Amino acid sequence: MSYTWKPDLIPGADADTEREAAAALDRPFEDQMAAEEWLTDSFRGLLAKGVQAVTLYEEERVVYGPMSLEA
Image (cartoon, rainbow, N blue to C red; front, top):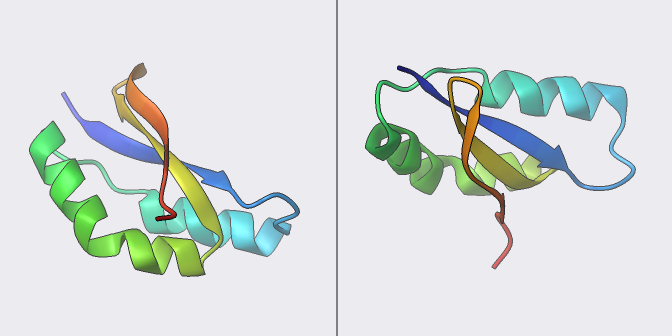
């Protein structure tokens, strides 16, 4: 099984921002813990790329989300 994050962008984000955010999140994780650890380390950079929330998937199943990245 693999876990992946999918972005929810800040409203009004342009196509370049959308592509950049999707590329930043385009990585599979072996387990949920690895995915969550990566997000903990990466959420500030994702916010800077225009991501306001993320959803965690296990294959095609939603594990949880959308979860806001803003404090």
